Image (cartoon, rainbow over all chains, first blue to last red; front, side, top):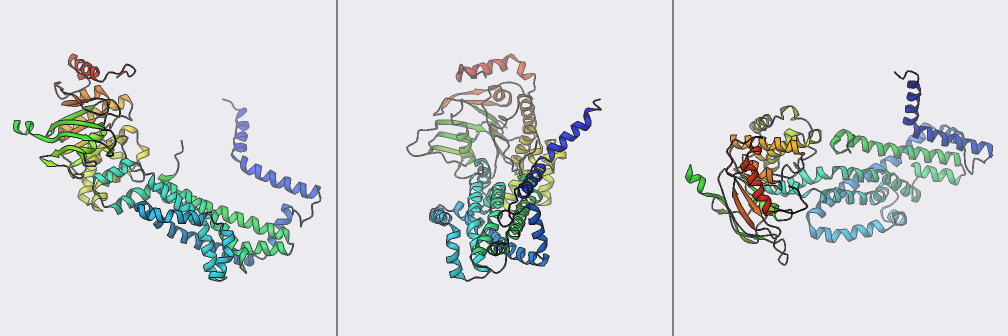
Length: 263
Length: 260
């Protein structure tokens, strides 16, 4: 019917679909333009093109070394915090006493700025991975405990009654009802934690490290290689974004039912 | 036959309940004998303790006054021969329909056998849900979800079926249809049914007797014998006796703002 308006409609749809990407590209172009027109020196604010050049001036293998150092610490800290947070949440949900004892302790840990504690941890545990992993873990585990506990406590009372009416053992109430019910909550906690894990690893590298993207950024800045520092920063953000996406993919793949319903 | 009919199967004697020692009574002085395979409905204004009553029969709640007994044995904990159908289906969204039906076995004993799976399939067939067995609950309509809730309660072949406003979340047409489906299941697999509802016509349409409860604290206002012939159908609704009975009950719980 509307033969003439169809291509227009298609164009509008595409524009709408790629709006976020177009906005981003526009922003980068504007940045480039400001740098060139305003003749902003590279050591104040490098232009996107300078950053890209700086990125490729660093050898690929060096990038990989730094990436691996940061990723290793972030993932170890993340996994460790999952291994601590989930059993802890189950314990706090099951035992009132444990909840009363641990909850204030968790609040104290959470309200202590980890950045400030990091140097002390390095003094305590040395300058190797263990201290960096601990710093990462301290930053990541609180959101996980909160989300897991919230999810398990929000289990509808009827589901618990179903379990009680069957006189099922309590560990099955936990494993077959409360934990699956908490899955969407746990994943929102994981999404927050995975980005915090990168922050944790970088904080640890700022304090003491010879490699890693955080170290690379600090090192580049101190030698006024600002475009290189920006390249490191952007690389770090991309990695962080990919990790965040991976958590979403894992959820979509293994727990498709837990995603919000699309209409 | 008559002997069995007249003996009390589920019996409540002077039952009352308060949720805390100082709290007001939610229900009080409930005396009710339910016969084996009888279908008893409970109606009353919201908050009159209908659900509390059901939880006391199920053993999920122990009354603070009086005694509930099943087959002359006091109920002190949840019983194996009781199946509960909850308001709003109460299915587990992470399990397929079939696994939801099998959940009571999986949850109670940790596993189930091939024979159990066969039984689940038979129940699904009976409810007309065979083709939905591997779907997730949220892919089903509200009426289908509640049918799954009903057959899940039937899995362990309970003698007593407790239904807590099971159709209240459904639209009127689905509600009527699922009511007749329930009667068909009940005819083929006789159970003692305690059916909580706030729909007067639903109570009259389905049950043998209706317990009418007062406002909180819920007491027994009347126990009405529903002498409509079975099997009942949509024609039952048009009979003069149906209108008489609904009017009678409406008189007890008449609230000017609430059209029944």
